[in-house]
Every structure is written in C-alpha cells, then in structure tokens.
Length: 335
Image (cartoon, rainbow, N blue to C red):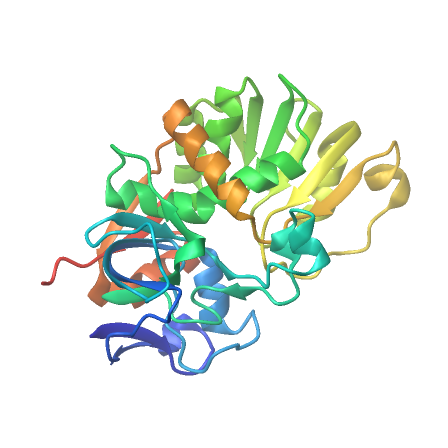
C-alpha cells in the first residue's frame, strides 16, 4: 500500500518525508484495521518529521487525525462491525494501571504510546488502532471535516479547560491555525469574548469571520486585559507577551507538544498578581468524548483544505510556511 515514511528526521523541504510501499498492517488481537478515508495534517506531524520530537520509531508513518472504516478486527475485539466509521487520535495506548491512569489522568501515563510517533499513523491507505482507543464519530459530520477534530479539536478543547476561562470571560488566542480556530468556536459558543493574536493576515480574517472581537499581530497587545490565554504557536518568545496581556489572576495555557526556548520572565510584570502558566500534555479519551459531543451541539466546523494522499509532503510544507488558514486534510479515493 501507499504510505509516507519519515526516512530521516530533518527539514521537510529536504525530503525527510517520502512515499514508500508498506504491507497492509495486520491488526493485533485488540486492534481494528481501518481503511483510511481522511487524515488531518497536524503541526505535531511536522515536529515528528523534522526531528523536533525525538525519533521513537524508525521510518514511522505520521498522521493521528484519522477517519477510517473498519475492515477487520482482532480476535478479542467486540462491539465494532465491518464498515463502521471510527476516528483515531494522538493517544494510542496507556497501561491503564499506573496512578495517573487510575485517577483519570491517562494523558500523563509514563507508558503512553502515540499514533504516528510510536506506531504508524494515517498518512497511508490502511492503519490500525487499539479498539479501546477508537472514537465513534457523530453522524452528519463528513470525513474531511471530522479529521481535524481528532487532535486539533481535542487538544484545543483541553487547552481551553486548562486555561480556566471564567464564564463570559476574555480569552486570548496566540496563533490561529487548525487547533485555535476550533477552540475559538467552542469558547464563543460558551459566551466568551475572544481576541486573536497571530502573524497571518488570512488567519486574522478567519478569526473575525468566526466571531472574534479583535484580531491583531502576534506581538500586539489585545484591546483589553485577558482572563485567560492559550498559546498555540510553538514560539517561546510569545510566553512573556501573553503573560503581560493577562489580567490579575489570569491563566496562560501552552497547548503545543513542542515550544522553542522561552526568554527569561520578569516576575513583577509577567507573573505577579497570581498569574499562572500551565502546560497541556496530550489528552484523555474522556476529553475526546466530551469535545466531540460539544462540537456536535455547538456546530463546530473545521475550515479545511484537502490534498491527495500522494501530496502529503506538500501539505506539510504548506503547513510549515503558513500557506493556508484552518487545517489541511489528506484524502485518498483510490480503491
């Protein structure tokens, strides 16, 4: 089958992601085999491809926003039928027995494994997923628009909750790509005032079209103090910028799995008055279930740009260069 592989982590412009031929995977005893119908292109895929994240699996196939249909299942799997549509997210496995898992924080499990990093993902015609970590998708949501919800949407939702936005609060979003534009829709539906700080003019236009109260450059100050902020751009230099924009008692959540180095923080101007700085690590299956339900209720929709599976490297290069707003999605119509 056609699949893309990270042949050697490095700049995507230099061919680190290449098309290959791999055998159709055989599902393990507890797994489903899926025919991939759509796969979102996430910035984490770029971090895996370029080596910002350490290599976990040589020649890995990226992709963890996967929509597929069940082709077959392992011997111990129950409750899924051939032809059923499911989604695959970033979190692939946990041990289920550690203290983190037992207290509902499976995203912190030291034994956690990830789709498209520890195991081959959705930049391919077929993929597997442990049945316990597959997600049933809402009816009425087509494959392309569903794909970005499975990571960009879920992580944005967890970041929103980590940011502790009060009811009717003022939220700042730094960066406005695939995750932020979905997070903004949830926040707006829940009554927040949203201010967007991002470098791209088209992204600012999208933010205003979705209902943001303002949109300005990434380093510009919002028009009012913020109760909460989320940093989606992987730019450490924006951490003190966002902290200065917070009102007293405000919270900044950093949503990315990778962040460039942060400059020194000035306590008096950036952390004093009980401001908080929090990170976001992956997500739980409960996050996914809650977000997918809310996305259906609120009518959350991804702004998408489709690429054929055969042009996955181009999609990743375009993501890096900021050539589109919203999210890119790979589709493969081959039989």
